[in-house]
Length: 322
Image 1: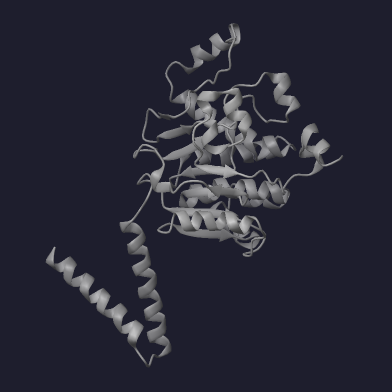
Image 2: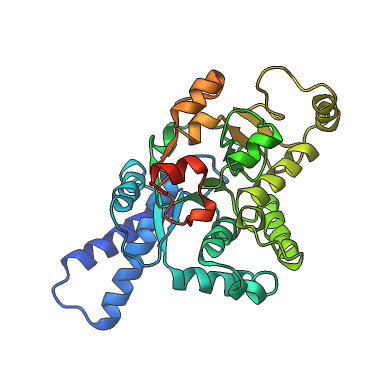
């Protein structure tokens, strides 16, 4: 203990010398920079927020390092509400470098076959698998500081339903959802080396080989929902029998296969499923399924900057006068 105190005192004296030194060589400047960075890292580690297995790093991506408005103000909400977390805005060049360095055999060989939107989809899974942390689309605003989120300490991953009930197949197709019980992927939280995210990456590689061209199915919420449902079924002892029952006699009211606000996982990895209202603040969520209308953790503004007309619903096109 005394040794640690002495070491801390020496570090503080070195930092003091950096601040008050009048004459520095280039080597001194480099050493001071390293000291400041190490000090910031230790400070963040002492004030870690959220489940301990999840690094306090917030990842976002944009074409460049300069966000437009209102996206810039949404990014500020993450920084201001979570000042002890690291914030990283990745540009297009950096996400390409990430794919090459972290997935040289699985995804890099097919990287140029993805559209820009699909590359952004793959990035969110890959960056969380490689480094862990909190991923949010550029149009996602932080509604509450991470330290106030009511998530179990042992959580390794956080996902949320896009809506609070299963859609019939005809309605799923009408609203252009990838799945009848869809998990959104504009906001995902995970510890690094998550096997569920690795499964998503492998599924994307397989679907590319199968000539899947729909972005929803290839890299979007379709493939992500498939991997989450697979994990939930594997980690819920009665999941198969429940699904058989649902298909034989569908419940009359709205329902979900896996209740939200619950921790799942029979093995090492634990997955927290948020209620739809935590990640989708649309009034329709609480109106259709009051129990899913929980206080939001984030606010998704649905700017849809990635969409083309073929990706939009009839209601969206009508609103745009098309």
